[in-house]
Length: 264
Length: 95
Image (cartoon, rainbow over all chains, first blue to last red; front, side, top):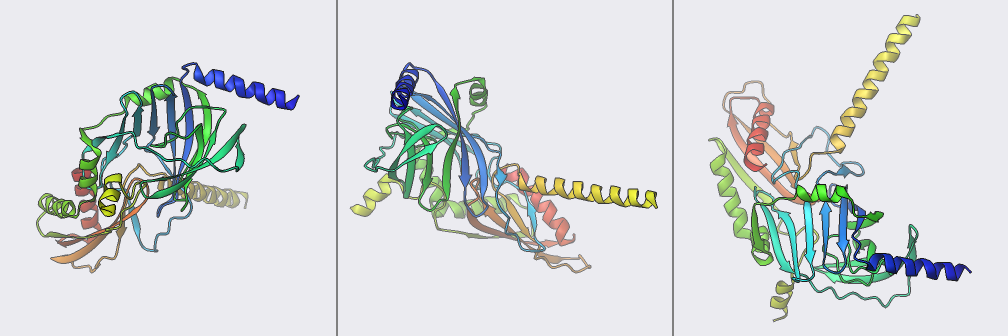
């Protein structure tokens, strides 16, 4: 009897989510970085055509801040504030665009790329329950990080938070192997006006392609330019010394064309 | 005696409330990059042409440590005041 009920539930889920209904998934996003923080994000999915992920700028600091005594924390921004982080996936056009910023740069960029191909390994037998959903394990390497995902076949949409796409079911939890980045589902519901309201607030200054953006973000010469620009804007008698790390930080550490270059 | 206890209790409660509000303000920040002002500043009382070194530790919006920027400022102000003015200037320039 229990098996029959489960099967019925499974079939109902399939029917519900395949009938062109848009669903809204809320995630908690954990950044276990130098200053650990928790953010909230929404994923709106129309499986056949598109999905849109919006991460709110507000965050809650997690854990103790490791400040030295006698130091004062100043909340001064070196890049635009209050920006909604968006990832828009249009399957028909094979296009992914994301809203990005660069430190020491006032511009808000809309960065375009083709939808990245993610080679998911779904050969695992591991299962775990998240909320009412039985989830299966999958792994993927994406842009220099190894991720472990838990997806549910009960919600057969090929979507997940941020840029994750192509797993056999909705990704309810995903984290990288260093546990620096983690998304965990909080709520699944029908799409509502909350998302539309957020979507109206999305804005950017400049639209560019991913290669140009990566070049702007990571090229050493650009740091020198930034220093010169800053010096011109500061009062006389002020000198600046940059001690910026050359090690890439963030979710994306290595890009496809960089791997190709190395292989060649 | 009752009055004294009441006053003491009131003062204690007020300080707890204030301390809590302070901690919640500092734990939920506006967003984006934060600067840590390493108040490792020279702090003599004669402010004429003194040199202040102000270190900003730079984080990205995910809380990743990106490095630091050190400003050296010749100023007639105190280093604390110079630091505040620099903060305002930085805000104008970047956000």
